Image 1 (tube, rainbow, N blue to C red):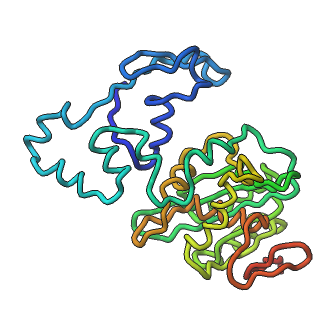
Image 2 (cartoon, rainbow, N blue to C red; image 1 turned 45 degrees about the vertical axis):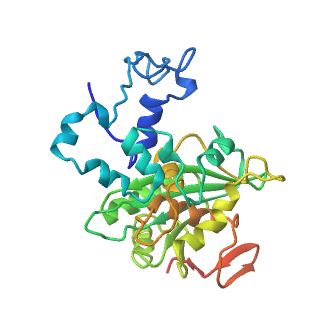
Image 3 (tube, one colour; image 1 turned 60 degrees about the horizontal axis):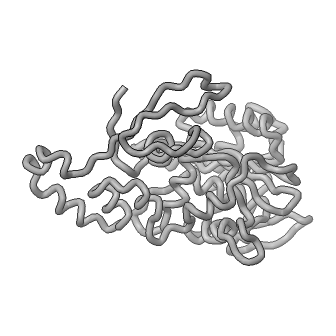
Length: 302
Protein backbone atom coordinates (compact mmCIF):
# COMPACT_ATOMS: atom_id res chain seq x y z
CA UNK A 1 0.00 0.00 0.00
CA UNK A 2 1.23 3.50 -0.84
CA UNK A 3 -0.34 6.56 0.81
CA UNK A 4 0.37 10.27 0.41
CA UNK A 5 -0.55 13.10 2.74
CA UNK A 6 0.40 16.54 4.00
CA UNK A 7 1.19 17.47 7.60
CA UNK A 8 -1.75 18.89 9.54
CA UNK A 9 -5.43 18.20 9.76
CA UNK A 10 -7.29 15.31 11.35
CA UNK A 11 -5.00 12.33 11.84
CA UNK A 12 -1.73 14.33 11.81
CA UNK A 13 -0.45 12.85 15.07
CA UNK A 14 -1.54 9.32 14.11
CA UNK A 15 0.32 9.46 10.78
CA UNK A 16 3.36 11.03 12.40
CA UNK A 17 3.60 8.35 15.10
CA UNK A 18 2.88 5.49 12.69
CA UNK A 19 5.29 6.50 9.90
CA UNK A 20 7.26 9.72 10.38
CA UNK A 21 8.47 9.42 13.97
CA UNK A 22 7.40 6.13 15.56
CA UNK A 23 6.79 5.65 19.24
CA UNK A 24 10.00 4.17 20.75
CA UNK A 25 7.83 1.47 22.34
CA UNK A 26 6.98 0.21 18.82
CA UNK A 27 10.60 -0.09 17.69
CA UNK A 28 13.39 -2.54 18.47
CA UNK A 29 16.62 -0.59 18.61
CA UNK A 30 17.17 2.86 17.09
CA UNK A 31 14.31 4.85 15.59
CA UNK A 32 14.13 4.41 11.79
CA UNK A 33 15.34 7.25 9.59
CA UNK A 34 13.47 8.58 6.50
CA UNK A 35 13.77 6.10 3.65
CA UNK A 36 14.57 3.20 5.99
CA UNK A 37 12.30 0.15 5.89
CA UNK A 38 11.40 -1.10 9.36
CA UNK A 39 8.99 -3.47 11.08
CA UNK A 40 7.09 -2.58 14.29
CA UNK A 41 7.58 -4.72 17.36
CA UNK A 42 5.01 -7.59 17.51
CA UNK A 43 2.25 -7.37 20.10
CA UNK A 44 -0.75 -9.41 21.21
CA UNK A 45 -3.14 -7.58 18.88
CA UNK A 46 -0.54 -7.33 16.10
CA UNK A 47 1.52 -10.56 16.13
CA UNK A 48 2.86 -10.20 12.55
CA UNK A 49 3.08 -6.48 11.65
CA UNK A 50 3.95 -5.42 8.11
CA UNK A 51 7.01 -3.37 7.24
CA UNK A 52 6.80 0.42 6.83
CA UNK A 53 8.81 3.20 5.28
CA UNK A 54 8.51 7.00 5.33
CA UNK A 55 9.59 8.90 2.21
CA UNK A 56 9.65 12.67 2.76
CA UNK A 57 8.99 15.03 -0.14
CA UNK A 58 9.02 18.81 -0.62
CA UNK A 59 7.90 21.22 -3.32
CA UNK A 60 11.26 20.82 -5.04
CA UNK A 61 10.43 17.13 -5.52
CA UNK A 62 7.32 18.10 -7.50
CA UNK A 63 8.42 20.55 -10.21
CA UNK A 64 5.33 19.71 -12.29
CA UNK A 65 3.12 21.26 -9.59
CA UNK A 66 5.07 24.54 -9.64
CA UNK A 67 4.99 24.64 -13.45
CA UNK A 68 1.25 24.05 -13.47
CA UNK A 69 0.57 26.51 -10.63
CA UNK A 70 3.38 29.12 -10.34
CA UNK A 71 1.57 30.96 -7.52
CA UNK A 72 1.31 27.92 -5.25
CA UNK A 73 4.40 28.69 -3.16
CA UNK A 74 3.34 32.33 -2.78
CA UNK A 75 -0.06 31.26 -1.45
CA UNK A 76 1.59 28.94 1.05
CA UNK A 77 3.71 31.81 2.35
CA UNK A 78 0.58 33.88 2.91
CA UNK A 79 -0.70 31.41 5.54
CA UNK A 80 -0.82 33.28 8.86
CA UNK A 81 0.04 30.24 11.01
CA UNK A 82 3.82 29.97 10.88
CA UNK A 83 3.88 26.31 11.93
CA UNK A 84 1.36 25.26 9.26
CA UNK A 85 3.17 27.40 6.69
CA UNK A 86 6.49 25.68 7.35
CA UNK A 87 4.90 22.23 7.49
CA UNK A 88 3.30 22.61 4.04
CA UNK A 89 6.23 24.37 2.39
CA UNK A 90 9.17 22.28 3.59
CA UNK A 91 7.40 19.17 4.97
CA UNK A 92 8.38 19.82 8.61
CA UNK A 93 6.16 17.46 10.63
CA UNK A 94 7.38 18.94 13.92
CA UNK A 95 6.53 22.56 13.09
CA UNK A 96 2.78 22.03 13.11
CA UNK A 97 2.85 20.51 16.59
CA UNK A 98 3.70 23.94 18.01
CA UNK A 99 0.95 26.42 17.12
CA UNK A 100 1.48 30.03 18.11
CA UNK A 101 -0.97 31.04 20.83
CA UNK A 102 -2.29 27.50 21.42
CA UNK A 103 -3.59 26.94 24.96
CA UNK A 104 -1.89 23.55 25.31
CA UNK A 105 1.71 22.67 24.42
CA UNK A 106 2.68 19.18 23.17
CA UNK A 107 5.48 18.88 25.73
CA UNK A 108 2.97 19.41 28.57
CA UNK A 109 0.90 16.46 27.38
CA UNK A 110 3.94 14.22 26.92
CA UNK A 111 5.41 15.18 30.31
CA UNK A 112 2.21 14.40 32.19
CA UNK A 113 1.15 11.36 30.16
CA UNK A 114 0.32 8.19 32.12
CA UNK A 115 -0.44 4.70 30.91
CA UNK A 116 -3.27 4.06 33.37
CA UNK A 117 -5.37 6.18 35.72
CA UNK A 118 -5.07 5.52 39.46
CA UNK A 119 -8.09 4.73 41.66
CA UNK A 120 -10.60 7.56 41.34
CA UNK A 121 -12.94 9.46 43.62
CA UNK A 122 -15.30 10.55 40.84
CA UNK A 123 -15.67 10.09 37.10
CA UNK A 124 -17.66 12.29 34.70
CA UNK A 125 -18.73 11.63 31.12
CA UNK A 126 -19.25 14.89 29.19
CA UNK A 127 -20.95 15.35 25.82
CA UNK A 128 -20.48 18.39 23.60
CA UNK A 129 -23.35 18.15 21.07
CA UNK A 130 -22.90 18.74 17.38
CA UNK A 131 -23.60 22.29 16.20
CA UNK A 132 -25.67 20.85 13.37
CA UNK A 133 -23.57 22.49 10.67
CA UNK A 134 -23.76 21.27 7.12
CA UNK A 135 -20.28 19.86 7.56
CA UNK A 136 -21.72 17.35 10.01
CA UNK A 137 -19.30 17.91 12.87
CA UNK A 138 -19.24 15.10 15.42
CA UNK A 139 -20.43 14.97 18.99
CA UNK A 140 -17.47 15.43 21.32
CA UNK A 141 -17.31 12.87 24.14
CA UNK A 142 -14.85 12.77 27.04
CA UNK A 143 -14.48 10.83 30.27
CA UNK A 144 -12.34 12.36 33.02
CA UNK A 145 -11.72 11.13 36.54
CA UNK A 146 -10.59 12.75 39.76
CA UNK A 147 -7.89 10.56 41.26
CA UNK A 148 -7.30 10.01 44.93
CA UNK A 149 -4.22 12.19 44.45
CA UNK A 150 -6.59 15.06 43.49
CA UNK A 151 -5.18 15.05 39.95
CA UNK A 152 -7.35 14.85 36.86
CA UNK A 153 -7.09 12.03 34.31
CA UNK A 154 -8.50 12.15 30.78
CA UNK A 155 -9.38 8.49 30.25
CA UNK A 156 -11.41 8.59 27.03
CA UNK A 157 -12.24 10.93 24.18
CA UNK A 158 -13.97 10.45 20.85
CA UNK A 159 -15.91 12.19 18.13
CA UNK A 160 -19.19 10.39 17.47
CA UNK A 161 -21.02 10.88 14.18
CA UNK A 162 -24.35 9.15 14.78
CA UNK A 163 -28.07 9.72 15.09
CA UNK A 164 -29.50 11.22 18.32
CA UNK A 165 -30.88 7.85 19.46
CA UNK A 166 -27.58 6.11 18.73
CA UNK A 167 -25.81 8.85 20.68
CA UNK A 168 -28.03 8.23 23.71
CA UNK A 169 -27.47 4.45 23.56
CA UNK A 170 -23.69 4.85 23.17
CA UNK A 171 -23.56 7.40 26.01
CA UNK A 172 -25.40 5.11 28.43
CA UNK A 173 -23.19 2.18 27.41
CA UNK A 174 -20.00 4.19 27.99
CA UNK A 175 -21.37 5.52 31.30
CA UNK A 176 -21.78 1.96 32.59
CA UNK A 177 -18.62 0.51 30.99
CA UNK A 178 -16.35 3.11 32.61
CA UNK A 179 -18.39 3.28 35.84
CA UNK A 180 -19.01 7.01 35.63
CA UNK A 181 -20.84 8.98 38.31
CA UNK A 182 -22.60 11.48 36.06
CA UNK A 183 -23.19 12.58 32.47
CA UNK A 184 -22.79 16.29 31.68
CA UNK A 185 -24.36 17.79 28.53
CA UNK A 186 -23.95 21.34 27.22
CA UNK A 187 -27.37 22.95 27.36
CA UNK A 188 -26.76 25.47 24.56
CA UNK A 189 -26.70 22.77 21.88
CA UNK A 190 -28.94 19.84 22.61
CA UNK A 191 -29.16 20.16 26.37
CA UNK A 192 -32.94 19.96 26.18
CA UNK A 193 -33.33 16.81 24.12
CA UNK A 194 -30.17 14.76 24.88
CA UNK A 195 -30.99 14.23 28.60
CA UNK A 196 -34.54 13.23 27.67
CA UNK A 197 -33.24 10.72 25.12
CA UNK A 198 -30.76 9.30 27.61
CA UNK A 199 -33.62 8.77 30.05
CA UNK A 200 -35.56 6.80 27.44
CA UNK A 201 -32.58 4.42 27.28
CA UNK A 202 -31.84 4.26 31.02
CA UNK A 203 -33.80 6.33 33.55
CA UNK A 204 -31.23 5.65 36.27
CA UNK A 205 -28.41 7.51 34.49
CA UNK A 206 -27.87 10.88 36.23
CA UNK A 207 -27.53 13.77 33.76
CA UNK A 208 -26.46 17.38 34.35
CA UNK A 209 -26.92 20.20 31.86
CA UNK A 210 -24.27 22.92 31.81
CA UNK A 211 -24.75 26.37 30.31
CA UNK A 212 -21.96 27.91 28.22
CA UNK A 213 -22.39 31.52 29.33
CA UNK A 214 -18.90 32.58 28.23
CA UNK A 215 -16.60 31.97 25.27
CA UNK A 216 -14.90 28.64 24.68
CA UNK A 217 -11.42 30.07 25.28
CA UNK A 218 -12.54 31.57 28.60
CA UNK A 219 -13.82 28.16 29.69
CA UNK A 220 -10.74 26.34 28.41
CA UNK A 221 -7.99 28.52 29.91
CA UNK A 222 -8.37 27.32 33.55
CA UNK A 223 -8.32 23.69 32.40
CA UNK A 224 -5.28 24.26 30.18
CA UNK A 225 -3.46 25.67 33.22
CA UNK A 226 -3.92 22.31 34.96
CA UNK A 227 -1.76 20.61 32.32
CA UNK A 228 1.08 23.13 32.59
CA UNK A 229 3.98 21.98 34.81
CA UNK A 230 5.15 24.27 37.58
CA UNK A 231 7.28 24.16 40.71
CA UNK A 232 4.60 22.48 42.81
CA UNK A 233 3.40 20.09 40.07
CA UNK A 234 6.37 19.17 37.80
CA UNK A 235 4.11 17.09 35.51
CA UNK A 236 0.97 19.23 35.90
CA UNK A 237 -2.27 18.41 37.71
CA UNK A 238 -4.15 16.91 34.76
CA UNK A 239 -2.95 14.03 32.61
CA UNK A 240 -3.77 12.27 29.36
CA UNK A 241 -4.13 8.50 29.79
CA UNK A 242 -2.37 6.70 26.95
CA UNK A 243 -2.44 8.42 23.55
CA UNK A 244 -5.52 10.21 22.27
CA UNK A 245 -4.37 11.69 18.98
CA UNK A 246 -7.55 13.44 17.87
CA UNK A 247 -8.05 15.15 21.23
CA UNK A 248 -4.38 16.07 21.52
CA UNK A 249 -4.46 17.54 18.03
CA UNK A 250 -7.36 19.80 19.06
CA UNK A 251 -5.71 20.82 22.33
CA UNK A 252 -2.36 21.77 20.80
CA UNK A 253 -3.83 23.69 17.87
CA UNK A 254 -6.66 25.63 19.56
CA UNK A 255 -6.02 29.35 20.05
CA UNK A 256 -9.57 30.69 20.33
CA UNK A 257 -9.06 33.20 17.52
CA UNK A 258 -12.19 34.41 15.67
CA UNK A 259 -13.28 32.07 12.91
CA UNK A 260 -11.39 29.08 14.30
CA UNK A 261 -13.08 25.70 13.94
CA UNK A 262 -14.97 24.69 17.09
CA UNK A 263 -13.11 21.76 18.75
CA UNK A 264 -15.78 19.41 20.11
CA UNK A 265 -13.48 16.94 21.87
CA UNK A 266 -11.67 19.78 23.61
CA UNK A 267 -14.94 21.29 24.80
CA UNK A 268 -16.21 17.96 26.14
CA UNK A 269 -12.97 17.47 28.08
CA UNK A 270 -13.21 21.01 29.51
CA UNK A 271 -16.78 20.35 30.68
CA UNK A 272 -15.74 17.07 32.34
CA UNK A 273 -12.77 18.63 34.16
CA UNK A 274 -14.87 21.59 35.31
CA UNK A 275 -17.63 19.30 36.60
CA UNK A 276 -15.03 17.41 38.64
CA UNK A 277 -14.04 20.66 40.34
CA UNK A 278 -10.54 20.55 38.85
CA UNK A 279 -10.85 24.04 37.37
CA UNK A 280 -12.99 26.95 38.55
CA UNK A 281 -15.85 27.88 36.24
CA UNK A 282 -16.34 31.59 35.64
CA UNK A 283 -19.58 33.39 36.31
CA UNK A 284 -22.01 32.34 39.03
CA UNK A 285 -19.87 29.67 40.61
CA UNK A 286 -20.52 28.48 44.13
CA UNK A 287 -20.20 25.42 46.34
CA UNK A 288 -23.16 23.31 47.37
CA UNK A 289 -22.85 20.08 49.33
CA UNK A 290 -19.21 19.77 48.30
CA UNK A 291 -20.05 19.89 44.59
CA UNK A 292 -19.30 22.61 42.09
CA UNK A 293 -22.52 24.42 41.20
CA UNK A 294 -21.63 26.44 38.11
CA UNK A 295 -24.97 27.30 36.50
CA UNK A 296 -25.63 23.56 36.52
CA UNK A 297 -29.04 21.93 36.53
CA UNK A 298 -29.34 18.37 37.84
CA UNK A 299 -31.66 16.25 35.69
CA UNK A 300 -33.98 14.15 37.84
CA UNK A 301 -36.42 11.46 36.66
CA UNK A 302 -40.09 12.47 36.72
